[in-house]
Every structure is written in C-alpha cells, then in structure tokens.
Amino acid sequence: MPPRRLLLSLLMLLCVLPLHALDAQSDLEVRLSSPDSLTARESGKVIVSITNRSSRVLLLPRLRTPLFNPDDHLMNNLIDLRDAAGKPPKFIGRFVTISFEAKDYFYVAIQPGQTLGKEIDLAQDYDLRAGGLFRVSYVQDYGETDLYQSDNYAAYKSASNELTIFVSTTLLHT
Image 1 (tube, one colour):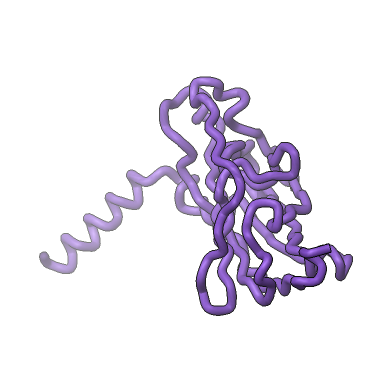
Image 2 (cartoon, rainbow, N blue to C red; image 1 turned 180 degrees about the vertical axis):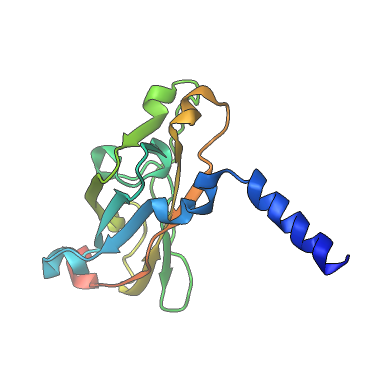
C-alpha cells in the first residue's frame, strides 16, 4: 500500500473512533494501597480506591468491583493475587450473579471527581495461610451511562497498580 493511501486510511480510522475512547484509559484511576495498621497489612488487607477522572458519570458493574462486598466477601474472583513464585492462591470465596436486566442495580454510578474506597480483607476469599509475599492487582471494568439503554457490558477496563504485600502466618492463625 502506498504511504499516502496508508496515511489517509489511518486518518479516516481516527475520525470514526469515538472521541471518548481515545482517553478511556485515564478516565478511571484504580489504586491499591496498604492500610496504616501493621496488623491489617500483615493479615492480608488492602485498600482499593477508584476515582473518576473524567467529566462524565461512569458506571461500575457491581459484580466486578471489589468495593461492593456484602459480609466482607468479594462477589467474585476479581483480584489477581500471586505468591512469590507467581502462583495464585486458591480462591475460597463465592461466585455471585445478578440479572443483567436489573441495570439500576447491576451498575453503580461514580460521579466526575468522585472517589470510592474500601479496605478489602483478601484472607476472607483467598487461601493465604501459607503466608509470605504476594503481588496484588486487578482490572476494573467500567462504562458510560449509555449502558443503561444497551445490551452491552462495560466497554472499558482500567488496571490498578501492582501492590506487594506480606502476609504473616502468625496473624492468620490467631
């Protein structure tokens, strides 16, 4: 393909893309951090913060968001957790489904500039009894308010930072 035709094709493709798709990666900031308490840190707890950096209301699928965990249990295996050897610990939590038709409940709106956060106890849903170092991360699905009128699922993904935690076997067995 001649260079001029290739350039024209690329320009046409850029015109067809929705403008909000170009900056979708930076619309939602997902951050993992350690609690202040040493006991909380070494027992497998992490803090999840999700911030809407866009000027639009964004929607988070409740089932794919660790902030919504009834009875201190995740609704699904959402977290990418790896031990020092790179092996994931066994997920001992539950798998929950919600009817996609109940979209007002299926999605949680996060307003522009709003931050949602929660301390998550990973030992409630993952077998961390072996203790040691673990790498923690996850990818948050999200979309825009047009999902309320659509049969599609959340269109975008935002990856968290990777956090390294140390889990003390002494704290887990007390």
